[in-house]
Length: 408
Image (cartoon, rainbow, N blue to C red):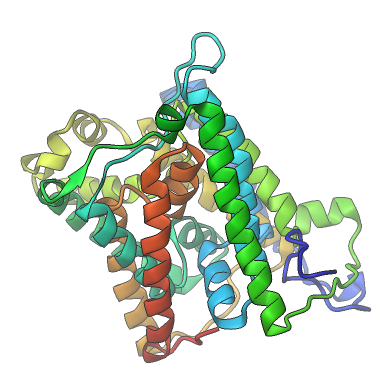
């Protein structure tokens, strides 16, 4: 396979390996995941609504696709920086580009009758700049972004339990500080479709994404990087269920499910708001009044704080994502692989989680909410988020060895 093929996944089984040597399905984890998904959908449907149950299942589909496609933003960015391998980033650009083709018209007046979805369009200012940089740094130390943390957790990663715990802590602290950051220099949200028209915004962003993809290809060629496709011993159906998926297949699933989320939930797929809410709910449960803080007095925060977590779209989809990833990992035979955690690795998970949580609140989201959702919606803030988060990633990669992590 040539270096221009973004459909390659780096997790191919070595040539000549037979199906009999493939990992066995983890039946216990797979049965648990299926029962939890079915039970969760019934419970949410009865307690909240059928719409919320559907969003729970959409979240599970996203988790299934993310794990089988190893579609992690963190590793894709790091591979480009350290190995000049741009396949992961080109897959991300493709996903954003396809998402944009649907999102920009839908959120600018061309949705089906009765629907008025809102895009991920956020302000540009000090909060965004600082938050995106901190997030990019933190995701390299935590070894996962918002979605990566959840699908790795669903896959049984012990380290991600630590990362997620401190992601939540950082998110709560960020929610408390966000109003102060919003008072710092900045300007109102910029919808590129309003400035350049819908076709103009699509063409402008498509050109920018194509230029970035070309840059990754040029970097590969300059470094002499080549890729080879290895035959896989599984049938197409078996590979669909047990993985691994090519980047292209996982990307198409993510695009389709994100569009479904926009139409059903009324906004793009998000991850990290749920973490802030979980932390605030936990604080409330032990007697700490979160409603005293401005963020949780805003209508959305106040409603979420007073209602059940099952009524929160992000929380329900996050839970589905974890269970979908668990099912994928169980079918792949990779669930809960044994790992040894050093003190430095744990420290990296703690620091990375805190930085990602805090940064995501300040920057209005993570790779999903701000990068994919922001650029997909035609928001200027998504591009600024990407530039600052990538700068933070470069710094984070340099710091990884101090936390017992490989730079690669």
